[in-house]
Length: 252
Image (tube, rainbow, N blue to C red; front, top):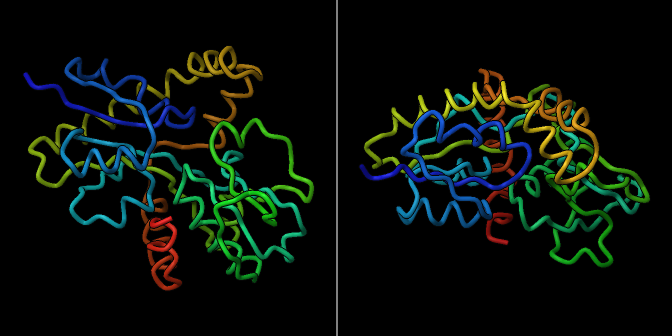
């Protein structure tokens, strides 16, 4: 039997979605790498299902988005930050995080709508007034000189909605979409039950305590998506389209 090929970034916040896939279905193969590369591999048919950033997911109608589980936060997430080197109302330039087009778009929308400043997104952190930092690097970082803005918390204040960072996506012509949908939901349920063990592993690998990682994965992130999460995806798509930031950020 041909294996079902999955791809996901090796971030702590995606581990509960990925860790038990092969236990649910021994025919699964999981590849780890960069989310943007996973999208290219998925579109090319070299993998069957990928955990991709929501900004990529909503731009590709040729993909089927599985919106039952994902990586989401309802308020402060602690791992998607705008690190400010000037007071937030004085920010003019923001350095992108090359790992996350979604977070770059989110930063631009939050600054315009929540703070009231229009910014230029740049590639170089040198001389930038602020920078987007995501993932475990953000979670373990010290606060910037003018403080950190938690972008998920700012989005919540702005829209009263949670924010979905990543979703499973399958090519629409793949003939096992329903099987993968059930598989990912079951794997997520098992993965959430394994959070204490996953947290202990991250404590050993990256530092901090098991309790630190457990609190992050259980309190800052949720994996079972709700109607509010699905509404938030639509809101993000609408706002990004109106301000024409989605395509611009995805091309950089």
